[in-house]
Amino acid sequence: MTDTAHALSASRTLWELAARRADLSPDRPVLLQDDRTLTFGELRARSERVAAGLYDMGVRPGTVVAWQLPTRIETALLSFALARLGAVQSPVIPFYRDREVGFALRESKAEFFAVPGLWRGFDHTEMARRLGAKGVFEAYDDLPDGDPAVLPAPPADGTSVRWIYWTSGTTSDPKGVLHTDRSLIAGGSCLAHALRLTADDVGSMAFPYAHIAGPDYTVMLLLYGFPAVMFEQFALPDALEGYRRHGVTVAGGSTAFYSMFLTEQRKRPGEKIIPTLRLLAGGGAPKPPEVYHAVVRELGVQLTHGYGMTEVPMITMGAPDDTVENLATTEGRPPEGMSVRIVDGEVRLRGEAVCQGYLDPSQTAEAFDEAGYLRTGDLGHLTETGHLVLTGRLKDVIIRKGENISAKEIEDLLAAHPAVGDVAVIGLPDAERGERVCAVVEQPEGAAELTLDAVADYLRAEGLSPHKLPEQLEVVEALPRNETLRKVLKYKLRERYSGTVK
Image (cartoon, rainbow, N blue to C red):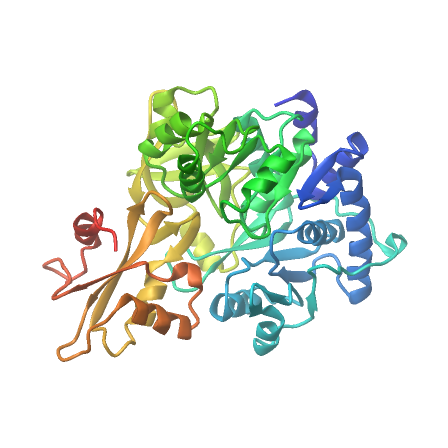
């Protein structure tokens, strides 16, 4: 990490970090989208005007403001405006629907809710009103505006909880993860240090800005003073034009992104699809070693993969100058300040980037051990060189394209289907998605034959978010169970179906 970046990483709050970068590099770009450019100086100035507009609406330090917005420059401005005010932000992934959004609004006790209106064919404003949300306002093109002279002093305390992120974990309902400005700055600093980026790089945000990766990545931009291209809707090959136009040097997101880039490259052998690209980086889902080797061989760039979660946005990360073996088979090493220990095979964590716990105090008590380490529920071991190898999960969670999906939530919904006697939902290895969702069903005698399309239609009608829908259906006479409590043996199902594709 450069001396300047190291000094900036000591900022107490996200707003202080943004203001200090604006002083250093006011005219350098920070966010690029289509034909628009936002500089570091404009980020500070425009965010203050939005903050004043929010203040006029009644938003004060400590006010809980939920927002469900796509990856846009306006979303970043609104988020930094809330950081300027010292409000408590509750970002919600844009493709969540009534079940998850309603739960997040109720549990966070949000007093305001920013939505994009009609976006990608779905009316978010109508959903917000249907859910009885308070203080609903649209924040897509137009943002609140006001005179910064009305604003109180910026927050000086970086250790108060000002962020509530949502993760499904292993329960049917999402969990509200509590973060501070300092924990998010620590996570972004870890990522920046691991990737060895410079002010000459150009990054990219092809993931939801409402994901924990949003502030993680933005902190990196503020520390090093380089820009990132934002993609509101990411799809290849359409997005390639944006990568080329802005000269992106660093891209990625998760295993699914690596596979998509490989697919495009294979359409044009011998021609580099993004001439300026030198590094793919990401995490959030398992990475098969063969994917690493294919990226290096076919795309001609380095690939560094890491390990993170909503509770700890950056735990370990591969370094571009690490060995091929470590980059292909491990999740990298923890940065300075992140303590990783293995207890009975489980990965446990302590450090400034670790969250403060959950909205539900009982969940917080269960999550931390007596030494103050976060129980991740992931299984793994550390190598002699300090690299982390993950071997499985205690939690029954499926990670598809970097997003956690609760198997129990899908099982609970399918259990009410008249053509389902019993069901087990599992994650299966998938080169494109990291994992795909597979529902294994026992049908009651005399039930009509169940199809994957019928299952998907039923779950949509029940309000399940589209990204959680099963991509594979297996109908069996009997689910494998143990001999004692007749618990379904999911590992046997994974063994049986891991090599199948439907």
